[in-house]
Structure formats: C-alpha cells, structure tokens
Length: 353
Length: 167
Ligand SMILES: Cc1cc2nc3c(=O)[nH]c(=O)nc-3n(C[C@H](O)[C@H](O)[C@H](O)COP(=O)(O)OP(=O)(O)OC[C@H]3O[C@@H](n4cnc5c(N)ncnc54)[C@H](O)[C@@H]3O)c2cc1C
Ligand code: SF4
Ligand code: FES
Ligand code: FES
Image (cartoon, rainbow over all chains, first blue to last red; front, side, top):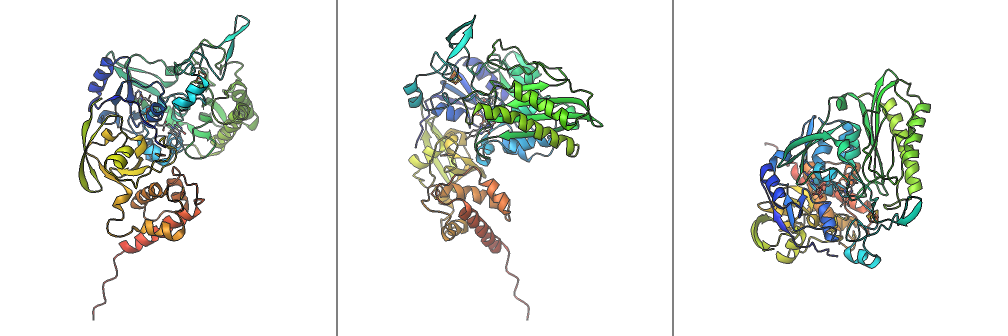
C-alpha cells in the first residue's frame, strides 16, 4: 500500500542560525522535521500538513550527547547505547517503537511528538467518512462529544483529549530535566514539566518559531534511583498506552524526594511531585487531571509496602485515561497503579545507582 | 514544488535522480531506480519491509525523504547477491525463513546490519534486533534459525584457514 505524502518545499539548513531564520520566515506555515518518524506518518494521513518542511537532520549543533545534556538531534539508538546518561533514560529509549524507528527517531521529535487518538491517526478517507474532528479540519470531538457547561450538557467544540504518547518526556520530567529552546528572540530554558500545557491540540507552551536545542539533566538525576515501566499491546513497535517514570531519593529507608510521571494517559505528561515543588499548570478544564488533589504525604516516611500502595493508589485514582488509544481506559487506569507499585518496589529493593 | 537533483551512491554505484521534496527513499528506489527488491508494506513505519542501509545504519526507507539522502551511501537487498547468494539469503531459503517472501528483504537487511555489528549474536539479541520487522507467514522461529545459521556460516568464512604445515 502506498501512502502518498502531500507536496511541500523542503529546506535543509546546515546550522541552527539558518534554521531559526527559516522558521521565522515561514512563521505559520512550517513544520520541523528531525527523524521524520512521527511527522511523515501524520503527513501521509493528511493531518495538518504545511507547505514548508525545515529539516534539522543536518545540524551538527543538535547532535551532542553527554551525561548532563542531550541534543535534540540525538537519535534514540544513540541514547539507548549511551552509558553516561542515567540508566533509566537509556532503558526508556530502548523500549520506544522498534530498532528500525529508533535509528531515525530523535529526542527532539520524541518530546514534540503529536498527540494520538483513534479518530485522528487515520487516513484522510477514513476521517472524511466519519466527519473530521477538532484536531484536524473539524468542529467536534468524537471521544468526548458533550461537555458540561454551567450545568448544561453542550456540544464539545473546545477541548481535545488526544493522548500525549511520548515515552522520554515523562521519564525526563521525573528526573527534573530542563529544556532549552531557540528562536529569533534568543534562547530560553525552562523546566520540561512547565513546557507541557493545555489540551490535545495546544499541548505545549511554545513561542512562534521556537526550536528545541537540548535537554539538560540536573546532578540530582544521577544521584537518585530512577526507572521506567511501560504498557503497550505488543512489546515492540506499539506506542505506550501507559508509561510510568519515577525518581526516588531515599534517606536510609525514608523518602527524601519522590517524583512519578505518567505518560500516555492525558494530553500532556503528568508529574506527581510528592515534594509539591512543581505544579501542573492549570489547563482550565475539568477533563484534564489534577495530580495534586488529595495527594498523600510521603516525605520523611518509611517506604514500606503500605506506603508504596498508598502512592500507587493515588496515581491510579487521579489518572483519567480516555477511550482514544488501544486498550480500555479502566484497564489502563488500573495499570497506572500496578506499574507504579512494581516500579517503586523495584527501585526500593534494587541497588542504588 | 520543483524537482531537485539527488546524487547518492546506491549499492556502490553513483546515482543521479531528479526527485520532488515529498518523495520517499522507498519510492525513488522502486519507481526511479527500478530496485524493486525493497518492499513497501505499510508505508507508515510499522512493518520493516522497506528496510535499507543508509550510511551503514538499517533504516526505514518509507519514512525517509529521498532528498535527505543527498551524498549518502545506500545499500539495498540487490547488493547482497551480485555474484552469488549471500549466506543470509541461502539460510533464509534453507531454513524456511521465507515463505511469501514479502517481508524477507527487510529481515535480511536488518539481520545483515546486526551481523556486521555483532558477528556472534545470541538468540535473544537476534530477536531484539528484529523486533521492528513483521512476518505474517513464518511464525518468526525459522527466521531466527536462519540468522543463526548464516552467522555461523559467515564466521567460518571470515576465520582464515590455518596455514599448511611446513614440511
Ligand atoms: C510504529 C511507530 C511506533 C512508535 N512507537 C513509539 C513509542 O512507543 N514511544 C514513543 O515515544 N514514540 C513512538 N513513536 C514515535 C516516534 O518514532 C518517536 O517518538 C521518535 O522519537 C520521534 O522522533 P523523530 O525525530 O522521528 O520526530 P519527527 O517526526 O521528525 O518530529 C516529530 C515532531 O516533533 C517536531 N520536532 C522535531 N524536532 C524538533 C525540535 N528540535 N524542536 C521543535 N520541534 C521539533 C516536529 O516538527 C514534529 O512535529 C512511534 C512511531 C511509529 C511510526
Ligand atoms: S480527542 Fe476528540 S478532538 Fe481530539 S483528536 Fe480525538 S476525536 Fe479529535
Ligand atoms: S513499509 Fe516501511 S515500515 Fe512498513
Ligand atoms: S514470509 Fe510472508 S510475511 Fe514473512
């Protein structure tokens, strides 16, 4: 079966400065292309294609990797084989997509992955037959057709709940990573967690023409125990339908810090920072989950089975997977708890990094 | 969007083709260069049929823009049997690792990259390396057998024969 790409102009800058200038020139009508493993399938389905594609594949500045920072152009295979990054990060990369896709797919593309939904990731023909949805060409949502407004049930023409399915995003957020972007306005660095925001269309707080340069890990990320668990229909090729990344700092057997981040259950990765230092930005909608509602106190307590169970229950209770990726939401919600429990037990009992 | 000249090396020979920016490497190999050994299964990254080597790395040609391969070295299944069948091809035939054959070029190109990187892989390493290739016929076991057999064959070929004893 051949899936044709729509026509576009391809720009192939050799430096970051050229790429920034091109992005500024084509303001509203460009997409960045790194490995292309997410953008090209979406283009083949006719999903929001633009007339200009700016390739980042030939920019050497984006390809640096060490234990402290990872360039946006570093491939998933390179991350997987790197021994300087925390083991959890390499392990997370090793479970993304398939070996063939990881050879092309990059960190930048992974963090900026488009959200997924049964009604969105379909061919043009398929979507036209059912009627387009909010995220591409349409005016309604097939997953949550009605919302409650002022006590009345009205047509949902506002909120898209498409799932954010990147694996590295929650893992890096759990480790407290920061992201650096560049545009004609200069560079800016922010907490990766603060970057993700909003519904399945908005997804992140990105200024016009911004390009992700690199992700940096704090020293803390190398000192704590961290790990990754993922649920997917098959162990290879498939996207996660639940992903759990965690970073745990112990003082003897007492919890000094704990950060758990969920992937693939909401419109952005969701961080549960049990130190309550970081919040989820208010996306202004009740369809999106609030990790800090009724959050149990865990700091300073002994990490016994009961405490792990409390944490896992909390994560499970707050998670609100939607019926828009494979596997039933009830099952995925339960697995949020199960994977959290397994991961924390493994981190507690395993050797410290 | 106008055509541009793509110059690259395909199976050791210099090739020049005029391609449009939205053409994939798979379509250029098959439609312009007539190298139809590379198959297109899903065209969406999920099956591995279209695997070729780009600068020594096994990648999906259906998700690679042709113009992104400017100056690159491409190797396709056609390169493996220029003079005689490659040990991987022989082993796939002998072990029943190829039935309808549609997935075979992809499996062989990925296996070939694996064996160049790791001449003596364990069964588990073979399974992991081939985790992005789908086969609907063989049930995979015969494919893993074939890769093991070919790996042995290639190792035997590489080890130089002991020098004849001096009389
Ligand atoms: C069959 C299949 C299975 C997959 N399974 C998984 C999975 O299990 N887990 C997972 O996380 N992903 C999965 N993916 C998605 C994808 O392969 C990876 O996330 C990969 O890392 C994407 O990187 P890329 O460089 O190919 O992205 P691209 O397709 O090049 O880009 C993706 C998006 O990011 C933007 N972008 C890229 N680089 C930058 C930058 N530097 N700055 C700003 N924006 C940028 C692009 O504009 C585009 O919108 C899968 C894909 C396929 C086809
Ligand atoms: S969640 Fe609704 S609006 Fe968003 S992609 Fe799915 S169907 Fe479309
Ligand atoms: S045709 Fe390229 S992966 Fe299926
Ligand atoms: S031999 Fe038929 S798909 Fe593999």
